[in-house]
Image (cartoon, rainbow, N blue to C red; front, top):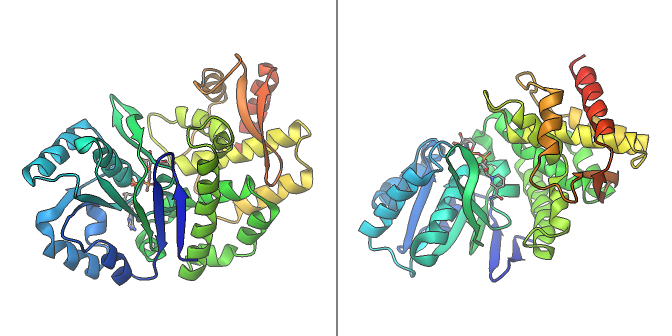
Length: 357
Ligand SMILES: NC(=O)c1ccc[n+]([C@@H]2O[C@H](COP(=O)([O-])OP(=O)(O)OC[C@H]3O[C@@H](n4cnc5c(N)ncnc54)[C@H](O)[C@@H]3O)[C@@H](O)[C@H]2O)c1
């Protein structure tokens, strides 16, 4: 299976898994393509670098994509496209991590009311998460992803070879999503990761291709069932309610989203056990799996009050109760409305004390 079709609300994405940079280049060598590329990637391999040098007139380079995922850069991009007389027969190709694919997706969605889009995600997070599901966005007024739209790409081209040059903690940042997808899907998915810990840590390309395919399929199936996030797509927030609270405790020195989600998942797992929803056996199995990877949590501050206050005021809460995604077993997530905030507050306090000791 080297191709998957993902049906969005009004369009289908063709997802291609390719084995080499030459295969990637064969997708992005058409004359009507404008290439948005993360500057780090420009020099990541000689083949890509030579290719981009040849096409330099058609290349829009973005340095520090997360910092530049904003309206100023968007204006530059619109000017670039206008000067090149780009129209709806053209296509934007985006090569980079999630910040770059979100940005390029936003430009493709808005320029001339939408032009064709091919994503070539290069970080693990972008491959299993950001490029799947059709969300595009830019940051505005210091708020992440405040302005954006749903815009389904025409093609997503995945090559696990890109991951060789990715920083270790960036790699684990993406692995957090893979682990989350497994937890909310089945015993089989969890065991598949468990049985391949060494290969994952070694970034074995063949295994990574398989892991990425499985993880994308999980997200794609959920997104296809619930494109507008009214039901099951909320399960993708497993670990996120706690995780966002953790991120809110670290605003002065931002941390990896994936690392916050991993701690958030540990909290959700422990809270599920605390509520007698999840068996001790599965709970400890899940935590063993997480600790098999070298997530660096050393710079993460955990402030129980901030975590709790954030969760209380989360805009996703409904019925004036704190909404959580908990786990009954692997593959059985549950939307849980916490009617007793004091119990949760006490749990968070105890967790933080334990976590640091
Ligand atoms: N659209 C969505 O559904 C969705 C989902 C999750 C995250 N996101 C967005 O994705 C972004 C995070 O994605 P990310 O973690 O990829 O961040 P990123 O794009 O900032 O990339 C992380 C770092 O890795 C570098 N990099 C990327 N690929 C590389 C490679 N192959 N080799 C070496 N370095 C490489 C980048 O230059 C950057 O320094 C955020 O902006 C987030 O909002 C979007």
